[in-house]
Image 1: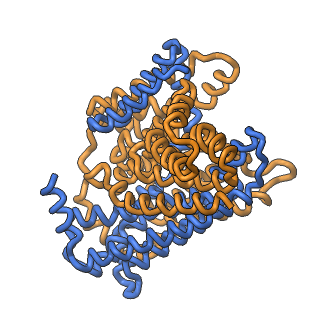
Image 2: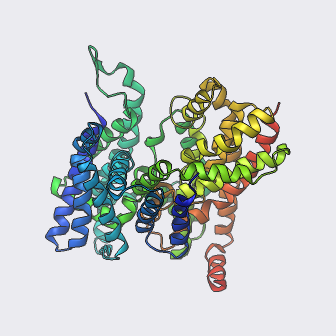
Image 3: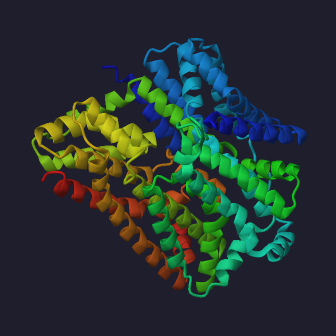
Length: 323
Length: 234
């Protein structure tokens, strides 16, 4: 059975290769950065089981590792190698030679993910299904990436070592942005555990005129946006804002339809996701991937859509949730 | 109620405003919030470590890098450009709007990971969008090219977010259902998902209009000029 942990181990192997290559070129801060991550991914399963069994020491060591990662990123020592462009002519020649066949392995990633996700209910031997039900689409994505890698090696006649070098090149270009989504999600976990969410819910509920339906709708939707901007994640904002404003004021006092209110509240939060650097995997990782000089380039390209959509959402909420 | 942990939020806001390294800011905010809530250092480190490991799925995108990296070395992005340059009728706006529709429909089916910034935007959509824009204005400068790549990324985000919420079997809809169930209100996933449809349509209309307007700016040749004005104003 394919479990999501296998995909984590594959990540760990890639990160370890990257760390070793950096070590070979005597770039020690980079080697340490990817090395720590490699350990987290290769040992993550064991450490999580220990945590569940009550042994917190390995998790504390990971906590120390997280602090070291942040210090390495903040030290400015993770300088990127200059992106090589001397191979431009050979890439053009190779593109002309291979033609549209080059798309095949790249499209295999979405195609195989789709195929495995759709056929999953039938992929089993006896009672044992091919994919573990937890995170099964992500496991399918990982399997698709492996298939695509083999197809790419076959098509380009590249050796496996070249795949390692290319991975290291791309990871080097991403640098600390690669780990930012995990760090932000970690912060979300810490904020929940330390009661930050509850405190914000209390404060915002105390600040609005509760008799006015329009004011409550506006406060709930805007609260979803602002809290999502702070947390980087509408899922973190939803329980806080709905427990603080949505449920007591709109559903109970003003008789809103909870299904409509919940759906539109969540979507207001998504407008906030388009606006915040805290949603790193959507707004910061692509800046690195697409080699944009302005760190806010993606947010600048989408804030107009987000703002128009927020007002559309407010109108929907005001008219659809109270019928 | 202890309001001190809220200072962690202030650390995030201040850190981003001062343009400090985001990774450093985020971890510092977690530590500040933890200490102010009265947690011991040992517990805080365990919380950081456990929380970090339980979010490992957010790093899985790196599994696409070996295949994408090899293909890029073999000229994938150059080929994507040439492919679009050869298709006369595929304009910039049609390319991005078609991608937006496809992305919304796929995420409505719960197929979020089929596309994305590493899987499809960097290797395919961004170079294709650049090539389609070159057909309108062959003399694009670097700044204009960056804006084009940024709107390609934005199109992927809009398509994902405002399709996902219509899908009933995971993510947002289940979270909403679970929240109300905890509070004694039973809702079926379907009854929640239908309310996401108006916003999904609005997102498609609004973003498509913006793509068409963006194409007009490319055609008018003022994509880079406007940005230079903005730079001068800074």
